[in-house]
Image (cartoon, rainbow, N blue to C red; front, side, top):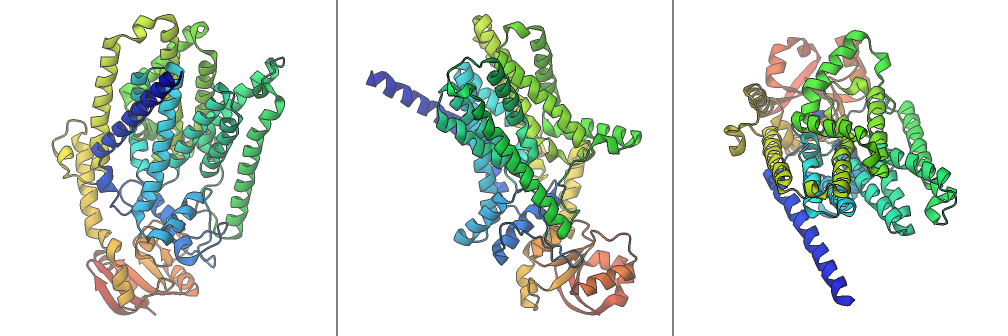
Length: 532
């Protein structure tokens, strides 16, 4: 008995190692090692800087976990504001205390969480299909989503929340399949963390809750502990804690700096017909290609439709999971429709749907048509499609950081319009914002402390320039309802002593001169002025 068990463990270990090697190999194609060295950059640098600002203030100021703050201070609010549950920001700040202030540590934490989630997804699919090829291929298909690839090696919270939800799914599956209470109850910790970080990550959790309630109600005679009503309680404990957190977040922001981060919904019914149409065009044209390849997404949806015609042949658990997650996606899109302009990261947690039609279809084929399930030609098509998507996503991800990358220069995946846009973006950033990344030693040399409040123009974001400089103060963000004179009085009232601005912007906007006392320094294209 011992030899087969040892052999089984060794085979399982080899399979797991093979998956991990493939995952890291593909990460090399996505240029992950080079991206680790980047400061916050590219798409949604704004939101990246917000996340890093919260983390840096934890690190530099030793702030209480429940009292986070950003660099943009606001009118009399000292920057106190809150977004998602700051467990990652707080943890990274503590890691910085141990290993020094390195932004790549933040990126590595997010990568570790998402990769752990993908590993759990691979194991979950293998448990369902008992097929190594399909379990690895389906998981790697998911890892060709441009938004997942981009935000995994990043600073925003959506991708790690997605990873935590995948871990939760694997744990609760093991609890159910193995009748193991440890796996079952442990899953709720991961779902709790996922939901606290991003409520959208709970699509799978809510679907599982609905299925579990159904089983408890209609399988009352089962003696197994899983079917007892009290095993529903952990779901509601999780939801209760998450509700309490969001209530606290709303309270904290109302008391301090509100309006910076969304802590409610962004529903479709608050838009007029024109805005609804414009958001739909943006979602279809810009956001969906970032979500997943259009052709692959169409094939996935065809599987979804076909499965409804073969409902009686499907695995009911998988089928209802698929349908419930789909309904959850629709509900989420309605509740957050206003965000579907440029906020592609809002779609990250909707990726949970993508493996479900494929797994449900393959599981049905395995039981009803095993020859088709094992067909080599079908696997050849799948691996060919996977390789094409990996190449396409590699080009897309590399282009976001460099238009001169060797894989990008002569690619056949991205059109001229996108190439031209990103070439301009990288050129513009280099000429206007790049200097902020290295200006801190110079600012300290000329006497500015991080607590000296500054006004940075023309930065329209909340924290990009302020975070990169590690300076408290204001940017061009906010107070657009006030006149220039009123804004300058507000800044002075809040302790602003310096103006930091781009040379070109200053030369083209002479209206700033009456507010300037003297020029105290310049760094590359950036000027530092003392205000009156």
